[in-house]
Length: 328
Image (cartoon, rainbow, N blue to C red; front, side):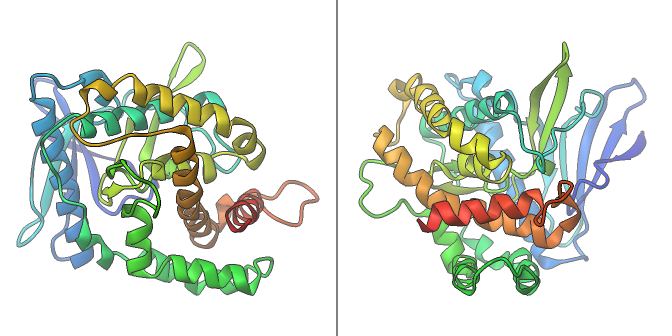
């Protein structure tokens, strides 16, 4: 067996290796050091729970495998408690192409692909009796918010009122509720599978005939069961330029409704979705986009690229406009 380190400089908490067997077969293996951090151990075990659930769903007779085609194939794993935790997947490292630049903004064509996949894994969740926990233990995972908020005061262009909103939204219980609760007044909607961390580092792309295609969605450590528009909000709020978000939101919501609608006869959980409900769900979920964009600006300031002559970086402008839209 040979090991090659992969996934460097992509912001992953755990070490990722490409495992090459004697016969040339390869796997990707994720190893979490049990002695490093108790929160990282918890995140590893949460991701293990997801892939064990997914493995069970994929074995069901009527599973829509095409809807899960952009999720890694899971070969096995171990918990991270008293020894290192391991997760084993199919190896895609030779297929990865140039990643779209989220600072500039994803092309709408790319966003449409991701939204189709979001609707796909949500439809599979709604169509199975196999349950998975909501993720209450993730309330402990507050370190990213703490580090980001500590640097928030440096962003002089954000008003004191907006800073207070961001502080309140990121309180552990408030953030968990933002992810998992269906807004008051929305009836007939079950919580669905939500990745909750669709930043650019957790999305792999490949090149086919000169165009960019989604290859895989990675890193399900912080998944929850909650607001159906949470992941869509991340993609259009954090990863799209403001002009594109505003221009294409209608088309994106129509696409989401269309993809969900194609599978609704299979649903075993209540999901009476309408255009009005989708818009309300998105308006709440865009708070999460504000938070994630704040994380990017404060924790990865190099990504906040300034155009020549501009006073603010691209991500700062994106966050300013998101806050304007969310706060009315």
